[in-house]
Length: 385
Image (tube, rainbow, N blue to C red; front, side, top):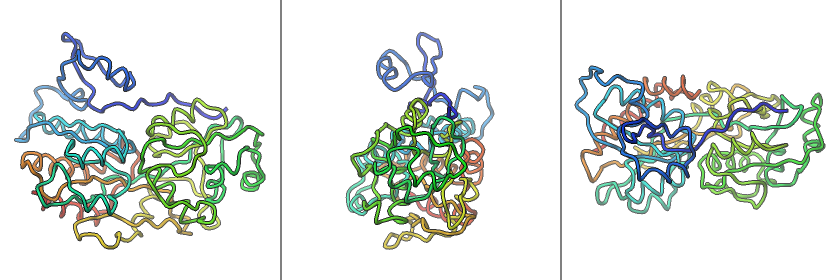
């Protein structure tokens, strides 16, 4: 049987509450349980403060609460970032809801959050609209903060190693290839004992930047097969949908003959396929993901302070892993509330800086932004009002 691990719950990263003085950690429960009892709870502090002492010395003058949310790919990194930032700034509370890129952008646009985490940059039609948290007649920009490979995860009895190419992946997720012993899969894996088990291809059911990156990879490499443009919603009526990164991982883990895609930090003990790059099957790595990003140009037609990247999906360089996502912090260039602007500048600046990038690499297996990209992000953050 393929390798397993317990599926993570998709919950708010703000995790420490009190009920009549007794700490309750909601990481043990799913979102429905949180909703059911939240009215009975008094919020005392967030997850990050659990690891710090109440008498930790700090010179920080920052204070306040900041709400944000979006990309579930960032969840492990956000937990690490919040832990360190709140320890260094004990009068600050950061709440990040890993609700998915689409939901995060919607909340930010509506003015319900200080910034959005998103695995896809703002769409042109989003850029032309209004942003609820931003000052009147000002816009938002995309700042890269998290680079990670997308892992093709699988759970197939008797199969520990699996090779895939873009065409075969496209046919599997479209529903054109339906069994694990299909000739196309056998040709890529001549030494594997592939069963006749039916394939269950699991995709995100919510609007997801991970889906947009995954479908962009397929559309750029095999447009004759994957004839839908990259998009946050999964474009075909095929396979099985699951909510959020944790939902996909859970469905693959608990299913039979399953395959899915998820941020590599969440792959756990599941099997992970190698993908064909040029003539080589390449295992994902943070280094190979960073190589692709380093060679990718900026998206054309954007403001100079918008750092959205046009990723090179069609590389044939085996040192690069093209199935990669760049996750952004979507922020205002000027905030309606100066106090929010101060917190965003401090926290997003930390996320994208050397210390924050080291935390994400250590705790989430992310590829750190290059020093050049860190400098570009820092320069934009400095101009936020």
